Image (cartoon, helix red, strand yellow):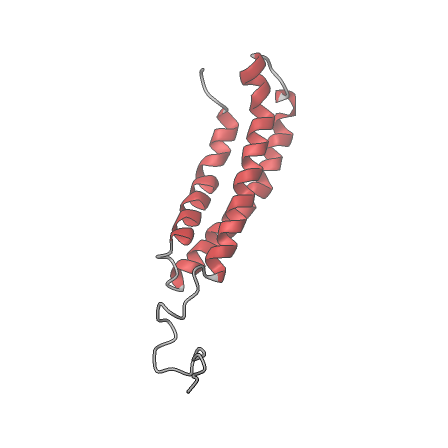
Length: 125
């Protein structure tokens, strides 16, 4: 006698049981991807702006300072989007997953600390 594997909804177990829940929720996965894009964008922006100052101890591209600060706006918008997705994931009770928690923390850190860090630079070395 052969048995067919049970499909979701055909068994008596609830839909949100551990056997039927996927490893990463759509909101957590989207938030993780968006926060990764924001983080890479910010690190590139920060390195482009401040690496000449640190490496060659000169002014570098600081005459383009207003352009760099304006270039932060998309990074802030991406971080806010990721924060919203992470909060939506948390509200849908997917927040216990490590991806949702990490993306929430990184998005909040990027949104609150990235502009002051870009403004003040590497500090006294």
